[in-house]
Image (cartoon, rainbow, N blue to C red):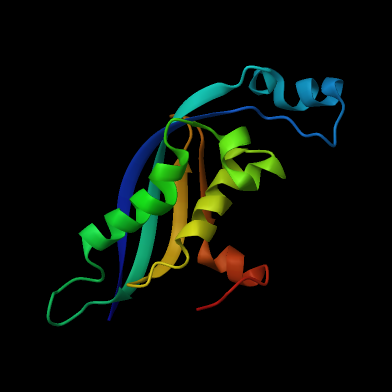
Amino acid sequence: MNLTLNRRYAFAASHRLHSPQLSDEENRRIYGKCNNPYGHGHNYVVEIGVSGPVDPETGMIANLSDLDSYVQREILDAFDHTYLNEKVPAFKKSVPTTENLCREIYRRLEGFPSARLERVRIEETSLNSFEYARESRDTAGGNSR
């Protein structure tokens, strides 16, 4: 029997939505106030979904302290109170939209050894959330573990 464990985490980060491939005018038109040269911040809420069989000895899919430590090291230490454009190498080449942030978090958590990563969901605001799920990744030619 497989079950899914969902765990929530929070971090604060800032970013500027600006593509070097577009003119300043196009960036302002497309990204609006999110193109502010000084950036802007969000209090993100990230939900991680992992699945696997229930271990008959522990009764768990994965040990929560192991998952928490992994997320702390791979995500929270790297992103919390950070200007994503400058401090996260992935965003030196891509615009740090929340869609791209969601994909980057997924990429960083794929190696969690105790369970299979199924999805990453990020709430950027009370109105906006984004989800990157295993199905879309496998369909796009990604890894299928």
